[in-house]
Length: 606
Image (tube, rainbow, N blue to C red; front, side):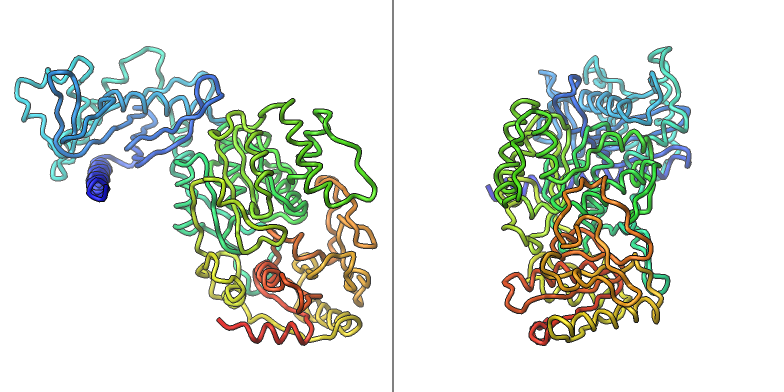
């Protein structure tokens, strides 16, 4: 088996080399109005829209007047035997290169026609060709016709037509191939610049992800801009993987990538569910989807607005995305199916852990699968049975796209079980959120899980203020908020005060008034109890109020400035709360903690 693996690796390396040579020689020979797209991958639905298939083309050439040309590239010596079988060296090619190129062409055209931005009744000029850069057709002599009736020699790009010293020969071969396909049918039309742009937007447009919160501190904080090469690589790889788990430490852009992946799936025509655990995160995601479609943005905003990624059909794509928390999804579908039992008062924990998930499973038996793709954010918060139930909501369970973004180090509610799902793993290892001093402190509490490298080098050092519980902590918060607001000019919506426990037990929430500064949370009452409002019914944050929430509920969100308080030294989750809470800060973090917690912070070494 070891020898076979080495042989396969050698073949793959040779194929990559051949594709690179074809791509480079085509680009060198063609003017700028010919677009060359390498290694094109996509997911396409079958004709009945119930199944899904992978699609791939080694090279695609696009021209607004001439059309599209799809290449299948094969390396090494090429042969066709007396039985009609094609070979590359000792490896049989089934289907044949021409059949494979034709299949790829028609699958690509179906995919493009399904995109929301495709023109109506679109039939662009398009054809296929094959490239054998390691052979010369002249070596066949007068036996070239024996390659078969389905072979057109003018559509074979051999070493002579791809000669790097004769780009004019390559240009002539490309134009000859386009001429052959242009006369195939009178119904075919030039794709035009719009058609080429559609292809470029789908396969080649760079992704720009911005921070999830629009408001930024005027001095010091830089906007998170272009995705790193590693993050782009993950997004591009997801085109080839229908079902994947994407692991990343705090600040590596999981939520931004989950949001962008949902947008891309919807823009490709998939009815998509974007689901998370915490309601504040669901509200923010829904606001970002609305902002990206050109409708009103939410109060917290963030990813720069607009439809990042495809840039086509943004409003239509937004209509194909359903954002929900898991438990709200349970309630909604169970109510629709008539499987929702009466809600008890008070609501026990078993209602969330057992009753609602059971009602969802019963509902699925009645309503069936209704989504064509699912994206889960903060997957470490989900039970294994919950994730299995989500899979059943797909039209074709175990086959349709299913992506779970998670961070095992943030599993505050239950153990992370995502790695038990059998999904293809991908890791993120670049922190694009936190300023360098914040990142360094976060890594001290990561327990060695999913270590990341910081992209940012700016930011001031984290600040630790020691105060006894109760009145001393309240006074320390008053002084701190006054300094942040008045002395340093930080705006209220750029700050979040996060407590280590629930708001029901929080002195800071009960006090709420700190001089001129007022704490606010639209999802709880004066006693800190959740109001049960759906995400779209929560009132917007007032411009003159500072958000106050628990660290647990704020997972997945962020602010330029984070204030952490009311952390207990005897809390068995202390390190994880510190990891989650500190990493919410983009520019600066302040910890108002007891002497015992301050001592614990000092004991933690790098």
